Image 1: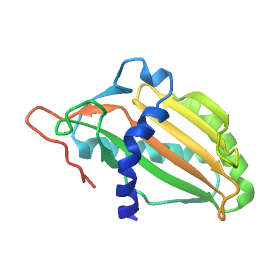
Image 2: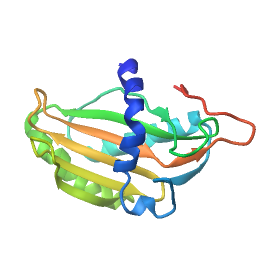
Image 3: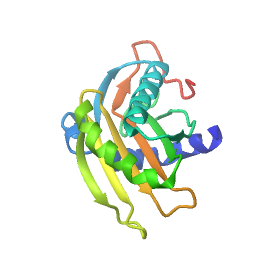
Image 4: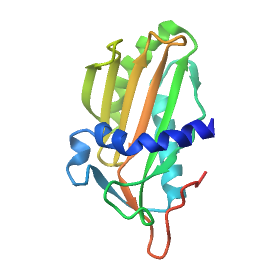
Length: 178
C-alpha cells in the first residue's frame, strides 16, 4: 500500500492546485498558502491528527484505509526547504446504506469545526459523483471528498493537502518521515 501512496505523489502538484479552495488561497504563494515552519515529520503527524478528526466527523460505522501522509513539493519553491503534505485515504461504511449519511454528516459537521465548504455538488465524471471541497484556513489544509456510490465497494474517497511549509533553518525536507 505504501508504494501506491508514494506513486500518487507524482500527481500531487496538480491536485494541490485544483484542491485548494477560495479561502485557503488568500495568502497564497503559487497556489498554496504558507502553512508555517515545520519539519516534514511534524507536519505529517499534524496531518494524521487532522485526518483523524475528519474520520470522527463521519460518525457512521466503517473502516478507513491505512494510507500514510506523503511529502510533496510546493510549486515554484526550493524542494530542499519547502514542502506540502498530501494525505489520500478512503472510508468504507459497514453498510452501503450509510454512505449518504456519512457524506451528509461531513457537509453538516465540517463547518462546525473550522472548515468552509467551497464546493458541493456533482463532479464532471461519468458518474457525476457528489463532491465536497472544504478549506480550513486556520490549519492551512484543504479536503476533497468524493462519494463513490457506484464503485464495487461504495466508499468515500478523501484527499487532504496542506499549505506550503518551510523547514527550520539548517534542515532539509525529509521525503519519507513515516
